[in-house]
Image (cartoon, rainbow, N blue to C red; front, side, top):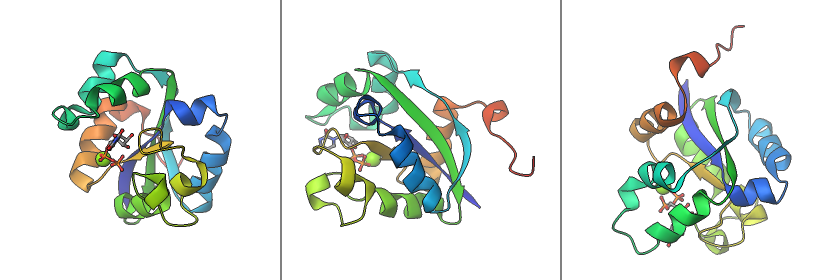
Length: 141
Ligand code: UDP
Ligand code: MG
């Protein structure tokens, strides 16, 4: 079983879409291993997206991600990373495939509702950014 990190971004929370998006995730047979609601500071949002530091959209992205609460989740499924990227669709909702979460709910390339890790290696790093080992539940409970 593989794990990935999802974040329901501030646009998702503000539009009262947490339930609808989580429904889509559960309908796609992901198991929720951990979940919390937090508000990122510009510093923590900047650290999470540090890989994009040199990109022109970086400061706007940091502003957006620290503009309200967000909901990070750890999801488990076979091939969770690739599978979840398929479920959310392309970064820009205009380019996202029909039926994907971003196609259905996102406003634009920045305010695109949800984050998903892009590799198994980054998923492990991103999961530990938000969650301690103690916060990851055992599914056998
Ligand atoms: N982003 C943006 N403008 C761009 C590209 C990305 O505002 O031109 C934002 C968007 O919120 C995206 C995030 O930066 O989800 C991270 O970008 P990435 O290329 O990693 O896209 P993702 O992996 O989220 O599809
Ligand atoms: Mg990415």
